Image (cartoon, rainbow, N blue to C red):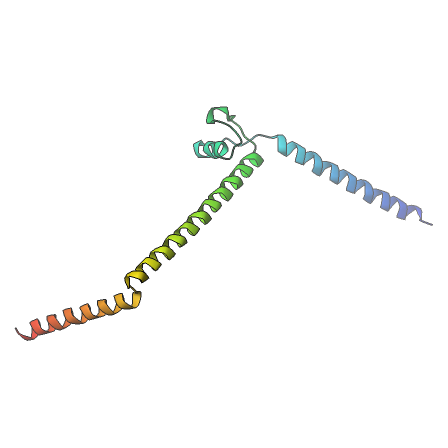
Length: 133
């Protein structure tokens, strides 16, 4: 059987938990409704590109911070996907150009040897010109 102090402590703890949950829930509801962010021109474009509004003229003067954050996240994801696509396209182009160069007989090793031979020839020509003076 529970004693009176233990019972009071348990009920007090439960009441405290309920009050805390209610205040947290009510502040979340209040925070969602507060529109306290003034979007600049770039953020207005983001809101249109993300599909939240159809045009820049429809955007209200105050937007909620949560709405703006969701918009930024959508734009960030779209930009990352575009960059991934461009990287894949660039890789395909590089593979194709490398295969075409291999068909022509070009290679990095041959280019390196040719450059070294030209460098040695120019150095020997300079040495001969300096020694002939």
